[in-house]
Image (cartoon, rainbow, N blue to C red; front, side):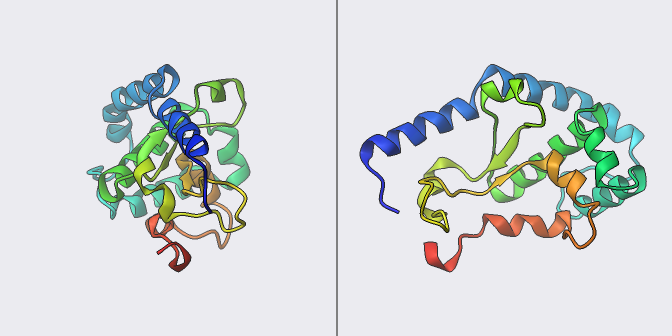
Length: 169
């Protein structure tokens, strides 16, 4: 999809707003501070490795009976810190970045997400040709709840979304 210079600059402005704002920065600070205590209560080694995503998935499956129960707790400390951990694994291994629009705090069920950096914008065209920004958005807390739905994949295979489709290359 071809976009005008004005559209490009507006996308860049939105990307900057979502990447650096007080709502996101506060959330990241809280989760980072909470992580050591969270890791002590959660069995296993939490070293930000890809293999640790399998342990985290097992931990989620052992803690919640189904996706509905997990969604009821998605704003709680356990799932918020777990989601921060998943996002940090993606950031460290796949070069993604945290984003969160500051107005999202006013919308129930909206949470920080990770995406590929803006400089990779054109690697991910919108499949329908509607949106000028087709970069994948990965919301860890929603995904943690979603793994409890049968046949909904695994955390360890999710990073495949960061590989551009053949149409983009």
